[in-house]
Image 1 (cartoon, rainbow, N blue to C red):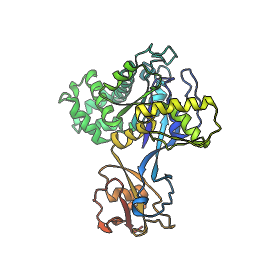
Image 2 (cartoon, one colour):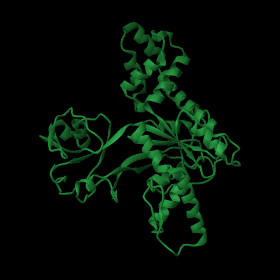
Image 3 (spheres, rainbow, N blue to C red):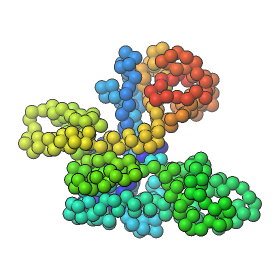
Image 4 (tube, rainbow, N blue to C red):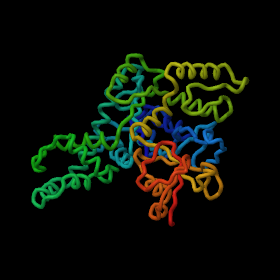
Length: 394
C-alpha cells in the first residue's frame, strides 16, 4: 500500500515528502524538479499499548517515541502534473503511471496562490488554488478513461455476443491500477450506466472513470503554504466537499531538522515544541516563533495530520500488534511488542496471519487475544490496537 503525493509543479510536494520521510530530495523553484518518482517511508502515530500493559516495549519495525508508536507507510512523490497530462504533455504519462499502485492520494495545493497553472512562480494571490483541484481530478479521470478505452470495442462486442459480467470485463481493463473488482462493481452501480454495454458512449466511460477514481484513489487536500495564504483562499478551500487540511511543509521540515540537531524537542504531529538550547541566534528565535504561532492557530503544522487522515480515515486502516507469547507480549526473540501492522478495518485474525507471512496464514489454526487470553477463530474481526497471538502449523 502506498500514499501518493500529487499536484502541479512547484507547490511543495518534494518539501512535504522530505518532511514526512526525512529523505534528501532535490527542491527548487522551477517546474519538474522531480523527474523520477521519489519513494520513501513515512510514519503514522499510534498509541503504543506498552504503557497500558505496564511493560517496556522493544520495537522492531516501528519506533516508539514516549508512548507514541510510529507505524511505517510507503510514500511516493511523483513528477508534477500539468493540464493535458493524460495526453502526454509535460511528464504526464510518467506521472500517471507512477500512481498506479497508490491507494490514496494527497493533493498538495499551493494555497497561497503563488504558482500559476503551469507551476511557474507568481505573486501571492495571483492564482486561484480552486482551479488546481478541479484540473488534477479531471486529468486522473481522463487517464483512467483512456485505460478503459483500450480495446473497448473488442471487449464490448464480446460481452454482447458471448455474454459475461461487465464488472469483470472492466476489472480486467483496470486491475493494473490497483483497483479491486469490488470497487469496480460499486463504481458501475453509482455511474448509472445504460444496461447494454453497446449503448455506452464516451461520456459514460468518463463518468465511470470518475467513479472508479473516487472509489479506488480517494484524495485528501493539503492546503500547503498556508502560512502565506490569503484568508479568503483558505476559507474557499475549506468550503469544498473535500477533506482539506492547512499545512506548511516548509515549517514541518524546518522543525524536524531542528529536532535532529537537538535545538527543539518535537514529535511529528504535536501541536507545539520545546526549545532546548539557549545558544540559537535571533533569526532562529524569530523563525521558531513564527512556526509556533502557526501551530497555535491551526492546531499543528498539518503535514502529519494529513498523512494520518489519508490512511486512518480515508482508507479506514487499523493498527494491530502480533506477538508469539500472549502472556509476555513478546516475539520468538523475547522482544516486547516488536511489530505493528496496518490492516483495513474489518480484517480478521486470518488476514493478520497472512500479513505476517504467507506460510503462517496457510497454516492458521487459531489465534489468541492477548488482552483477554481468549481464543478467537480465523473469522474474528480485529479491532484497532489489538494484540494477537497466531497459532499456526507452519
